[in-house]
Figure 1 (cartoon, rainbow, N blue to C red):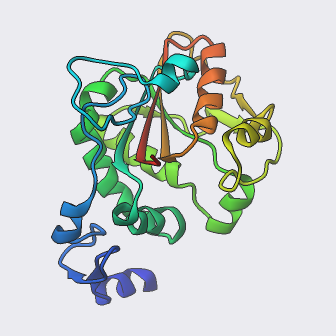
Figure 2 (cartoon, one colour):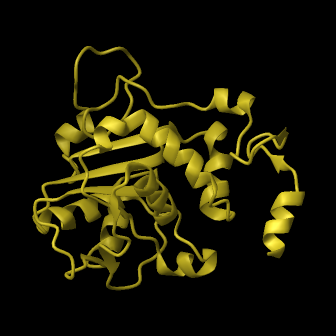
Length: 233
């Protein structure tokens, strides 16, 4: 009750410039215009944006050289100074209500890519971080997206089998080694021939989402897709 009173009394401020805003969406109109949304042309598989115009659908060099395990990945924003404070507020500073803002934008941008999914599930979070934050940002976002799309959410479809180091400071190869054998598909769910949508907050090296997608494919899913708020370029 007290937290509700505090939220009502305190003014809403933009996560980027700290200016007062009328609604607690997280960002003011001026800063919204500065956000770098990922738009076409981009890789048909991983969603990495191209710097020049290309006609039709094309696959980037990385996906040709090392095809990812997921079938499709899309991100809403480029991770930069304009999106960092907004993302970090959601990811680290208890601004879980930003999930409503992000989910609406993701669906508005990628509804076509999400319309056929059967199950939505969050990418797993390091257990120690979960204890410190008391919430899993991808799970909060997945819940909002499932509500708006009226799709089934299964938060424990992927489960941890052992502790791992935090991924943030590791290279892609180190992340892959760190994750090896640490995740499995929950055997109580039958996901054969299902289309699974993985939700994460930011796509960096793609190691975690790739591992999760590999496990889902090993469980005979029809397709594994990935949606994130931001992508590092």
